[in-house]
Length: 256
Length: 326
Image 1 (spheres, chains in turn green, red):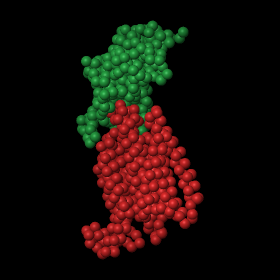
Image 2 (cartoon, helix red, strand yellow):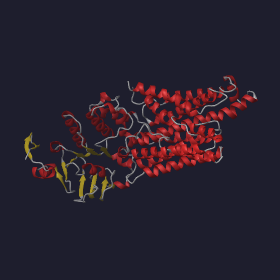
Image 3 (cartoon, rainbow over the protein chains, first blue to last red):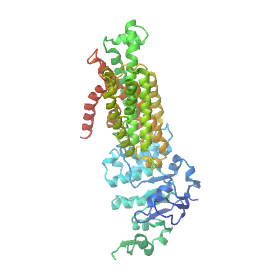
Image 4 (cartoon, rainbow over the protein chains, first blue to last red):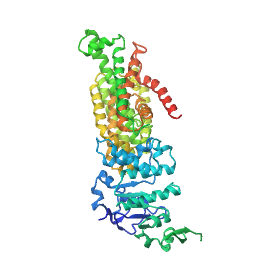
């Protein structure tokens, strides 16, 4: 059974021809990497899969139910989305922010329970931001805010994670830690789709890859089949050299 | 600091403050009435003159002041969440300007009382729809666009108010000026605004957490399971209704809607489940005290209550803001 199904899906990027419709299903345990140059529609795709943007054509199903027949609350109980950019609104502490992840599971009159508090604190601990819990999010560094956002998603704990650039602003250590968390989630039976800019993160951590071209073309499949230098050089219009480190390919951009 | 502010203690303190303010307001005036007398009147005793004065003059006015203050503060808090901007309030958005045109128009024609209030209510709703209609492009809800539209419409109303004042015969001017600065001396029917305030506060309680999520923007809210569009429309409609009722009861009283929510946020944080009821209590208490001062400082003359709210609120607000920046 697949968590997420896209059937003949064309995302709506204004002023672009429709290109190739997407037909893909994301299964539990898979980590999908979405790769493409700036403006290829990675974020639009993620938002379309989450039901925030209507598709131009085609449909998306979550657990075999068409997305557009589900209420937002029901969707949010199964599907979590990490945005690339976030609005701070009014000042809020790290704990208050992460606790928002429990919102889809609480009824109107319910307050957060001890169990919700435990989950939220465990998520802060896992993302290494527990020591910041009483700080206002607006006073944190970019990387710390990114980890708080991931902790919010972990507090939500959905079956499907749609993550727009999980490693944004993160230092090397936390990049690895966050990617390890993603794979750990997949191993626990969740499905993940990550927009990535770093080919090497995709090569190391993703089981499947979707390549999005600026003209709407796309191809997808298992990571080892997709991450071949010719396809990637065409995708980014950038010459690459490949070296192997610990059995995984590492792509290095070269001049010329 | 703790995970979230305990809701009961601040609300209990604010409620206590409101009761004390009510007591002061009922006792103080041209003839002061002691606490024992007030207690006797509350029990249905006491001499007739004092009873009449408290129950028929001071109590309706005090309750009106409380209700109007609460409505304005809650409306301001809602607008600020909706626009994700601490500068938003019903006045900035042009709602009170529309109400003023309605009220002053009626007064120019020599109408007063109920008719002026009804006309103010109509003006407020008209302005609400105008701002909303103009700001609501096809791209959906853009806070900046709504705020800008509101500000421009408000300044348009401001010019029309000046025009109306300059065309009005001198003997009708004082009433109009008092209305513009807020005046509770004709507020004799507190039931509707009080009921609206109570219903709104109770009705908003279950939505508080959704509003916390909405403050992160409609996309984030949708991703966390909030149906953002209907909630936004609902909040705008409710905030406009609260403002229209407040303004048609007491004229245009600025400042409460902007500053009370902001002061409370500085002290209590940003959980709408706490801030909204706290706004109702604190806004009510502020206006109640301001009105008590307005009718006693230069008695038997009365000051416009809007002057007092500004004179009390500005330094308090600046102090809190200054301290929070330390």
